[in-house]
Image (cartoon, helix red, strand yellow):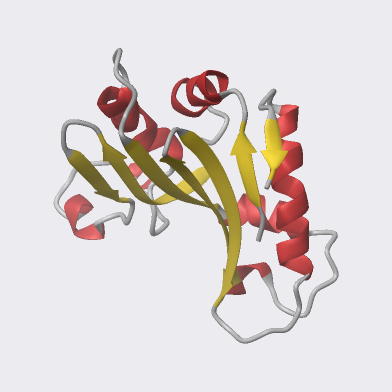
Amino acid sequence: MIAIKITQQKNFMAKLLTTDMFDAYLVEEAIIETFNTFTIDGRIHKDFYKDTSLDPEQIPSGDFSSWGKIRPICLDLIKGKQTPLGFKFVLHLGQEAKEKLLAGVDMDISPDQLNLGINIKLSQGQIIITTGMSTNIFSMDKSAEKAWDEFIPSFLESNGIETDLM
């Protein structure tokens, strides 16, 4: 686990909320504090799609909504002249991207047994990104976590986001 401070907040927020930079990530939770506190649970309610005439390919197959689907809602809640009091976005890497990232990593668990996530938090005027990994089995192997902790700073840098490791 590492913590990364965003040094150019305006640039980061523009990329987070108006580009597809994070669209492949899945949203576990989004909390935005403005004139009210808005909480979004990213879990998809499968029952919502039961009685629809949608093509089966249009019905989400995973458990969580992508950032690309939730991002416009968050943008509407945040945009304006006033900075939010705070926010927290809990995102994790989708299965396909996770498998691609971990393809060259020698580890004793499979990618479907772990989640690679980031918390993006605005608090006290600072935006901090914290990486994390969870597994559904016990393992002492930290190879996936190390790969994830190396990936996020390079991902941010390659997208023009200036950071400082904390």
